[in-house]
Amino acid sequence: MDLETLFAKTPATIDEIRARVAYALERHPLCRSVQFDIVSMPRTPKGNWTISLKSVAPDALWEASDIVADIQEAYELAVAA
Image 1 (cartoon, rainbow, N blue to C red):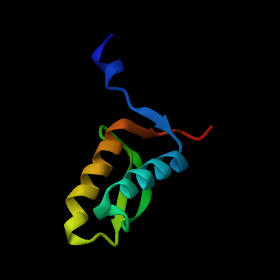
Image 2 (cartoon, rainbow, N blue to C red; image 1 turned 180 degrees about the vertical axis):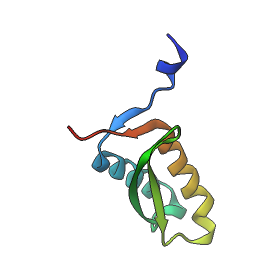
Image 3 (cartoon, rainbow, N blue to C red; image 1 turned 30 degrees about the horizontal axis):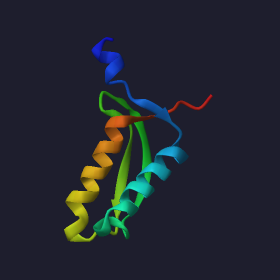
Image 4 (cartoon, helix red, strand yellow; image 1 turned 90 degrees about the vertical axis):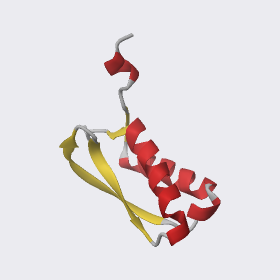
């Protein structure tokens, strides 16, 4: 197995990504009230979407950022057919 295949991102729709982020934030006690938007972007080496965090309490900022970063490493916004 080559490294590119091993580290390939899983394609997901914007609704799937939204659900995964919401579920992950809800699981962390400090991040339950975090609001976010998913923003589609031009394709870059880091991906083609990002999260805009809103209403983040100061004590939840690092945890929410880590959760979002982990999800961004795993998923790529699927191209609409």
